[in-house]
Image (cartoon, rainbow, N blue to C red; front, top):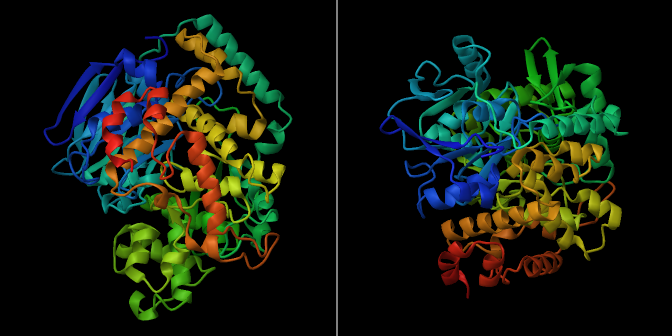
Amino acid sequence: MNGYAGNILRVNLTNRTHSITPLPQDLADNFLGGRGFVAKLMWDEIPPGADPFGPENKVIISPGPLTGVFLPGAGKLEFGAKSPATGGYGDSNVGGHISPEIKYAGFDAIIIEGIADEPVYLFIDDFNIEIRPAAELWGKGALESETLLKQDLGDEFQIATIGPAGENKVLFACISHDFGRQAGRTGIGAVMGSKNLKAIAVHGTKTIQLADPVATLEKGKEMFAACFEKPGFEEWTPQGTAGVTDWVNEIGAFPTRNFQTGYFPKHKDINGEALMRKIKVTDKACYSCPIPCGKYSRVKKAEYDIHVEGPEYETIALIGGNTEIDNIEDCAYANYILDELGLDSISGGNVVGFAMECFEKGIIKSEDISGRSLKFGSVEDFVWLSQEIAYRRGIGSVLADGVREAAKVFGQGSEKFAIHVKGVEWSGYEARYAPAMMLSYMTADVGAHHNRSWAITFDVATGRDKLEGKAQRVIELQHIRPLFDMLCLCRLQWVELGFELDWYPQIFKAVTGKELTWDDLLAFSERVWNLTRSYSLREIEGFGRSFDYPPARFMEEPIPDGPTAGKYMPKEVIDRLLDEYYKLRGWDNNGIPSAAQLKKVGLGFVESTIAPLRK
């Protein structure tokens, strides 16, 4: 099967068994790989109503058909599980080097089920599969665990680990890899922890069958050369994603003080230039990447001496602006702490910012936190609370369930400034004056995550007061961007360099032998988008339009200062956006796909489950 390893590995942790079966042709033909395989296998394999932390939930891991091939950015990997954060569909994407290693070991998907009776890690060396004891790793940090496994197994093994947050089932625990890459969103690290699975170690020596090896090599060379020739190549690479900080702040979209505003006056102390000037050691890239967005940094102060990858933009936004930590050194230190604990830095900064506002408003009192304070701008408070969350100590146990659940406990109006959609905390763009970006967050299938549709540049280019065309553009991006997660390619070459999308059907043909247009490939993405929506409809009682609304702060509170002062997005505007979006999607007014739409995108098998939910 050209482009594929040809096998699925199933591991049962309960009875310590595994099996290897051929990759079904129809799965590859209809769902491509990566995110597509994750979505279809979750629908088929995880029984309706499964407890996210029960043995019936499964961690599904998949590279894509272009993973491990000589072309730019061919190193992405998709993790999926029923999300403990949302109760519905969950996935998360990571770069680094583990995805090609899984392909080289001979697998297009790994399905992990059951619960081990003690801490273990999964050892994969080609078809030599073992479930090994991990008691000595349990309780250790994610980075330390990776170091210890590398020392034991050798540098040729690629490792994914969880930290104490995953072990303690924090709902925004991440999976860590390559000393600074994370599958961060939706709490899949907590699902690994619930299975007593500390790590996955992979080494592979097999090859990938290509339809046309000569054409693949030549096309890959052309694609690399085209990246290097792009005008933005030399400009973008030195700072990586941190370089966008100034622009986001200048347009009033930089999350500040738990999204109270969109402008941070001290942004230049935490931006890409500050990173380069004060802490950057060198660039760091994922597999086969021509534009290394990772920045390997060191911070040495009297209080600490750490090495960390980053901070990248999302971490700068949610740790820096959102909790008002106003220097790059302390941002990097907080980043390191979250990485070692195994906490998603996006949700981590959001949750800590929420707690700081609760403290500021008297909802959390000093006596609730052992006489301490939780003040904006304090890295000491940030680190202390992050540790309390990871170990579920005191008030940290409440916050470990994320802002949606914590607000239900705290009450007193905190629900209005718990910044999330569907239970997943908002990432790094304040969107009260960006309707396409707002809609992107609202309708993202996993919760408030920017990677499904980064539409804020479209808002700026077309007019931020305009609603016309915004829903259509969001849908276009929700097909383009997740398609990269199905092919398991990095999208930054396209996003940051303007690398033409026409390249991808060409290399897809060389690798797989299948001649598909770009629109043909996008049809797979539309199919998967409707399937992930259907999965959450199946799993979450009452799921629909009400789950797509943003927090009340964005609909009721004008931005107090900065370039977007006075702006907010009233509910009637939100509803106009949703109405148009649902109509264009072929969904009803409650956001449920119609029978005709499911049939159109090749999901007729979903209809019997979804039909009873329509009114």
